[in-house]
Image (cartoon, rainbow, N blue to C red; front, side, top):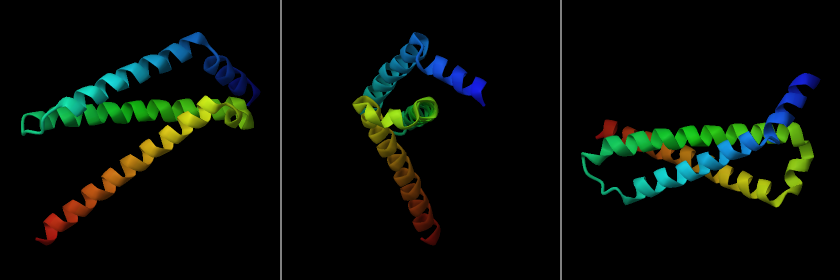
Length: 114
């Protein structure tokens, strides 16, 4: 397990890892801006679905980043204000996904009942 921990620590503290995460944040911001500016029509539904899938990929990347940082930093992760902020954003994002899934399941159930 020592080799894995050393490797994850090396990756997390590398400039490349930080640059990839920063690029993801910037791209995620662009996709959010695009999805927010689309007017809902039948034509844009496909684009919104694609942007939703892209958003899910970014959420997976941020979740992996969190897991890697907690793995190599342990309790030290929580002593950094930026890490705590990232964790809150990550948890709210996961809650949003769960609520979206729940509301779509409820609307499917209502549609089936009607």
